[in-house]
Length: 321
Ligand code: COA
Image (cartoon, rainbow, N blue to C red; front, top):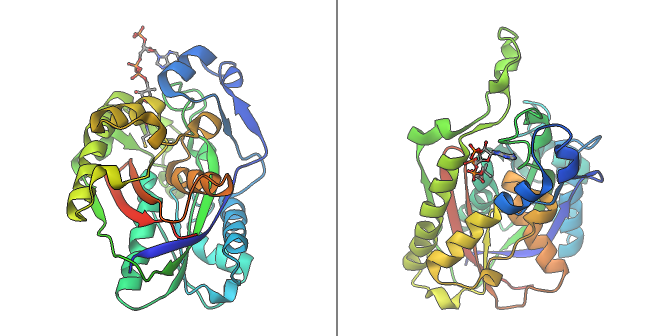
């Protein structure tokens, strides 16, 4: 009785920024960025807001699912980069798409956001409260990026992804989520200090990251997470068709695949075109795979997110479209 995805959508801003353009802002170069991260370009919102991107992705997901906005009972938006503090982005999306019946709220679990939104919607279904949900992950990270910091500005991009979920009739899978607040310092953004107006604008207002610490965390914890999800659900690793993992860095994905003894093609990747879009990376990739016809009915997909907090979270879903 796990949640099933019955429609996907995504949106990426029109403006595409390649590595050569970043090399005009900070001391770096295309070859270094490609070799260390796999990223060639990212979409950057020049005019688009987080709400706009979220609503576009949501509208496309509804269209793909073939259902009307009034059928949606729950909207969860995962974001760390909402345009405003209030109202929440989920309520803005509700207004934009006309999902009048939906209960709406935002959640911030950084790059694990989409996975946690999926787990939360699934839990509401299990509790018998809702049967149809829209989960959206939308990020405008460019607004939180210090464009003079080559440690971070090479990595991030903007975009949104969405999925329409329905309570399924098939098997129920158990989610796994872990957090380690002790390591929160490794990836921070203190932007809300700006609201107090007391502090001068400094680097800590932007995303600040210890890249090596995050890299070590990801290559250690993601294989552990995947093994735990499989164990909890009595699923063999070879039963998984696709491992759809947060798109942070190609070296992280390759390392996780190697740790698990899987070929890299089972870890699809589109970060070369988008950079790291935080919570939005998994649904953007799912939407791309869906629209390219790569996902077949009966495919078993393991989703896994990881990021600031620190947080790491995943689940298994059967593809039924
Ligand atoms: N361009 C060119 N050179 C750079 C550079 C850049 N953008 N950033 C760092 N360098 C240099 C460093 O100064 C250093 O030079 P040195 O050897 O002469 O001292 C060298 O490259 C290596 O630096 P290092 O910081 O060790 O790089 P790295 O291999 O750890 O790669 C990251 C940096 C950020 C790409 C990598 O740590 C990473 O991907 N971490 C995970 C980040 C992530 O995924 N975050 C989001 C998680 S949700």
